[in-house]
Length: 191
Image 1: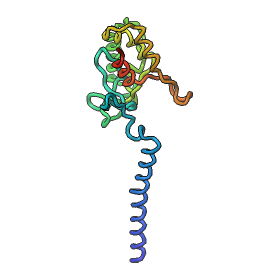
Image 2: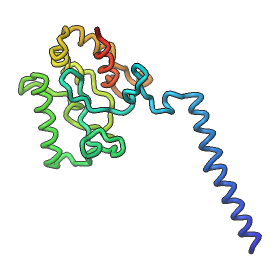
Image 3: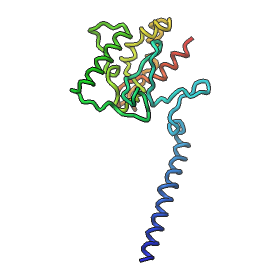
Image 4: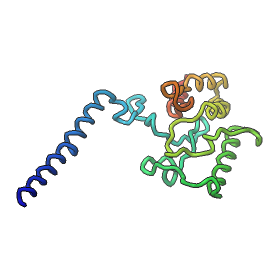
């Protein structure tokens, strides 16, 4: 019986070393060598200072910036520790009120008429609440406001958005999208 206990303890120790130390350290080392940017959070550095991750959405509220999707992550939104959607069903009154409020806000901020369509990604939060992208339509809806606030030509801002439209993943998955952080950083870099 003692031999079986010793054998089981040796197996637990061996597997602990392999799966708890060797495998994780090997995978961490490989990802650091092969994909260092992704392994470290895809952080965007501007003037030596990290300004955000291209994979995690942020709150932009100034009228001179493009705004991302609404966020239901955490108490005030965009809380990576509380990443989740709202979990409200399509017939939930709170969800309907939130979406109606988001649509109204987008129309007011961008000077859209009451009957104007609002892209769904500006009215609904994403499943994670941290989506860093918006659709090209959502970006183009905001062009005139951003141009007006920054005193720039509408066509200049429209071209900037066009240059930041990312295609489908590997040409087939998903939809074209615009990374809000990258777009706003390019906006700040304009002369």
